[in-house]
Length: 418
DNA sequence: TGACGTCAAGATCCG
DNA sequence: CGGATCTTGACGTCA
Image 1 (cartoon, rainbow, N blue to C red):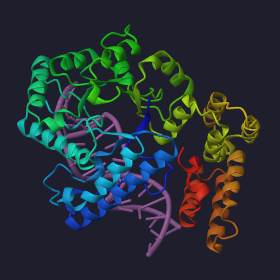
Image 2 (image 1 turned 30 degrees about the vertical axis):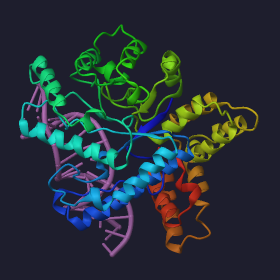
Image 3 (image 1 turned 60 degrees about the vertical axis):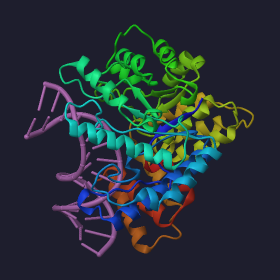
Image 4 (image 1 turned 90 degrees about the vertical axis):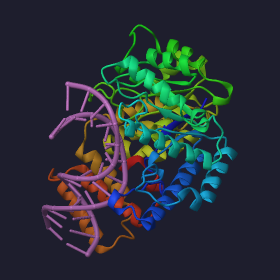
């Protein structure tokens, strides 16, 4: 079983995807952006290997306007070697990658131009995986599309347009239930007619159920039979509801207890799990450590080095409690560790606690900072203490110092990002 | 015609 | 001038 995250990282250096707007899409500009993005992708994969993250969805933004005539660069040729190098790295490390055109790639549209653009977009996504020389277990996931007041016709159109696709695309394509239009029953029915593997998305099923009484596990089991040997291991999407937002909105982080009960419910299915969550790699590591057979406290210590200042920001007492929790080097209190962190991060802001954490972080710079930086942080801290400015003003200045002085400990800290 | 979702780029404002 | 903050872009469907 592999667990992964989608498209981008939080608190990982040199993994940013750059882009541009149409009017700036000159060959020169595109070349520099693509070069950056391929290097970022490789850095992301290297980070994933270091952190035991075996699954990644590659951002569709890898090549700006990749499926549009706006982009006239022959990027497939220019960056052939880079793609091959990335593919080799993926295979050598037994990673699995995927791509996912967004809601705006609509294969079953009533508008032929929209369909043509969707086909072009699928080609573009397929080109990337083909250039990396990835086998057909590395998938492209697609939504069914719109309903157009006539779902039966719309489904027929999907099947017809799917059937007309190149074989190289068809063997990568997989479909998922969405949160508004096509529920899992309908997607499975489409699969019956087309043999397309089905990805079950638990939150979409919650938002757009076929039958509320049918359990996740039952759907996942039914989906498993749509996956053939050459498709690789069955995949699902997993996310949790953000209770402060509308139904179907992804939670900021994966809550460990809720994940664990889901996992225990479906673990015999042994699927790969793509997490869809705001804090990306952070939740992936959390879930991986939770289920890891390695059970070595060094992994929790490493996580602690990333979370510690966020905890200190909320509560000095809880900071000490967690340090105590990690004292026994033969133990692996993974559940208690993450539950405690989730609880602490949920606490209300406390100005004295936050100031304490800010001063700790400032400690990394106070000897090398310039005079004007010393003055600025002093002013920011005073203003924050008086309640004149919000906390993130101070944190964002400390983050610019982190980047400027390139402090490797703070760069990997979650303090500036959660 | 705006909302939807998503992210970074671009534009603008501020000291 | 640099940095912070607000707005736009890019996509298609649906109310």
